[in-house]
Image 1 (spheres, chains in turn orange, blue, yellow):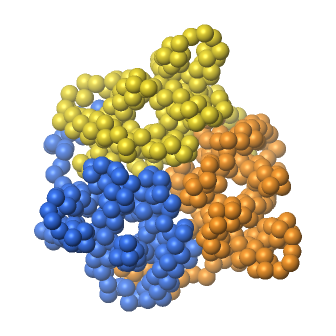
Image 2 (cartoon, chains in turn brown, purple, red):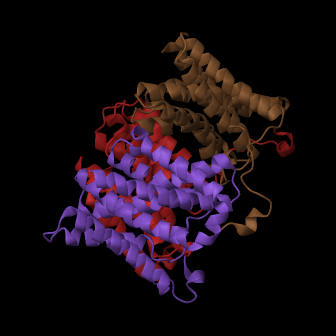
Length: 209
Length: 209
Length: 209
């Protein structure tokens, strides 16, 4: 279980920085920045644990709290340097969703849920922190509107996990490869500007009930 | 318990369609439509199960997931036909809240909660999916603003349930009659344009603290 | 445990009135007012209980429901008198967060959580009802934006609790003093217009990634 904790903390750092940057763009106060960082980092996992009925991880393990606080302070202090890291926000976020997706799937399996629910749980773990962040910032969650390959990358990574599990590979390798699929799909989609197909025909607007 | 599952699935279909139509009006992408359909359909029941401390139903029973996915695909493909079903949205939604109210009450009773809490749980099961949908769409929940007889119909149906339970009727009949009361109250209120009384006098605005 | 229930009910009344006034300002209908009062009053405690894994208090104890309903009816009927109580909203709210902070800490201790998590839980109990209220009213939670000393007061009260616990004082005295610290810090901050320091330098806006 040790490598799971390590992966979880890496994801926590990634999401905290993304949360700090989002909230500072909104010019929130110190407390607001910390809360948004916290919610972005642990929101998805908290919803997952509540839905599954597991104890909420960050309440029993102070590591998360210290990591988020440290990352927040670091990001606020070095905010001027973060200007040069514009692309890193994307990188952090992408690595984060890759890690969280697979972690969510493994928690779902530990609760003996079926594969399709595990994939949903993994995607939720990865994406829900950002949705909560957008709700708290009073915006329509970006996730639902942009046709970006974001949750779709998590879902594909989830299918990869269960396909690879059929082969005689070590769990660590299945874990790593599935995470890499999420990261690759998301990165390639952004690089080549691939988007979800539109479900709306021309002039659909007026015809919808 | 079989007929409870059947009723639950009928309600799931009804709310999914209502969710698909709402999110397509907002021109969300495929993933957004699916999530809004899902949240509208299972949001109320999920909150109920978390509050009561029951395992969340849709996580252990794939039927819900398949029904919501199928309904969403169906509704997206036949969206042009749904134009002619404008009134059906209302019908689906109304039958949905009738079914969900009574289902919520029975779950509350199974958890040995008192009647007034059961009625609150039933109303929450029926109405909270729509509230969550509005929050995700970044709107003030319609439920709180329109003076429409909506939650009120659920509450009246809830009282009907506990009044009828005093008489020597079968549980199925009590269930059906209470659901019908919800549907009737809501339909008649819309038909005759009956609304909640205003709590505001003329010129109250300026006087409120 | 009796004095805990009493304190809890005082806080419930305070938050209900604050919720009624907020929702009436938004000209919600009767049902909306009741729901916002309810959410503002029990939202923080409900989230706390779900996160800790405790049964949700108001579902097993009708006292809360009756108190919130009674307070709501009272506040709606005497809304014209409440005009003269503009400052009382502040007072109610401030006493409420003092009480809820310490109550949340004690529930955290009962769940054997570490002090820092208990302080977070206490702050959440005090502040999250208002955050939920703002989300339901489709506003960015005031808590995150105003630089006001609000959550900060709760956090300081929390530290006070654990510092005083080191001394040979009765639990009731520690409870009361910590609550008073929250109330004092908040009141003095408003009186002397003390705010959180800004984390933004001049011209930061354009430089942030």
